[in-house]
Amino acid sequence: MAVAGRAGRAGFRGWLRRSTGKWLPRRGALDAGEVVLSQRRVFILPTRAGIGFAVLLLVLLIGSINYQLGLGFALTFLALSCALVDMVFTYRNLAHLALQQGRMPQVFAGQEAQFELHLSNRTKLARYGIWIDFDDVKEPRHVVDVKPDGSAAVLLAVPTTQRGWLQPARVVLSTRFPLGLYRAWSYWRPAARALVYPRPEEGAPPLPMSGSASGSGRAGPTLDNRDDFAGVRSYQAGDSPRQLAWRQIARLDPSLGGQLVTKHFEGATGDELVLDFATLPAHLDLELRLSRMTRWVLDAEQRALPYAFRLGALHYDAANGAAHQAACLRALALYGLEAA
Image (cartoon, rainbow, N blue to C red; front, side, top):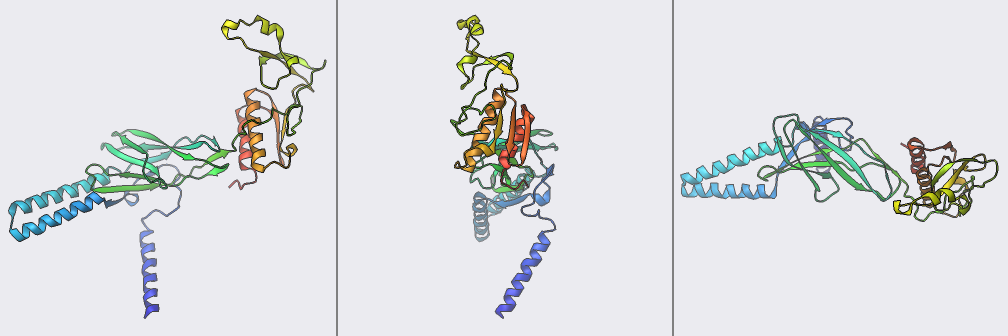
């Protein structure tokens, strides 16, 4: 009998999963593109206040029956009608909203990754008091109102601790408008993910000029007669005092915020900058080496210095610019990880 009972319960659970699976969204499924909160995506249940209100209605009904109170019956059914109307309006406050993933800038480990969510209301019904946040957050932090035929945007922040791809938790949208007797909610699982770069090292050694990527990184450009003068630039920490452009410095007016400037040379031996992961000290931790490479990439871009990049089998020729920086940082973020 016990075996038959367990078999019956298993069969009922299987039937229930098959039946609800036809209209409920699959758990863990990612929502790509625009998602409309149709009837199958909006859930509603009474709140604690709603349950207390139902108990109150039951007490009023029993008292009206026992004492034959006509006004008691009228009050009970009037309150019940208000509760039913509130249920309809709570559901309508969330249903048929259109959701779409917005911008998702890349960040460094330790910063907050921001996921932008756009809500579009294509109906003539205004939406009020919609709470939005990730499912793993105890109390929602964002509330928005959406005007008829209007839209709103919400930035959801997620703290990051390590490099690589970051897949956020599912987003919960809920509302208790207008009376708070019911809570309607829906789930949205963004298909997009954020790429987290390694954390730049604090106090990293200077850039390894002339292709020297030793731990100290103090090798600097050598100046000889074969170098071509290319102009002057702002002084950077680590520049040799021999490169200071004294004539230009003398012409600067200190009252106008004058600063030190450095001669900039171009040539075969002048400014060769190679960021090679293999030449970093082997005793350093992997994440620390990646953080140092990240810092050097950012420093080279800030100083507008062309740099070659080598990370394992990946080699990039000397260049600079946003595309070159993004490619190098992406390689550092996914090094040793599955780029799925």
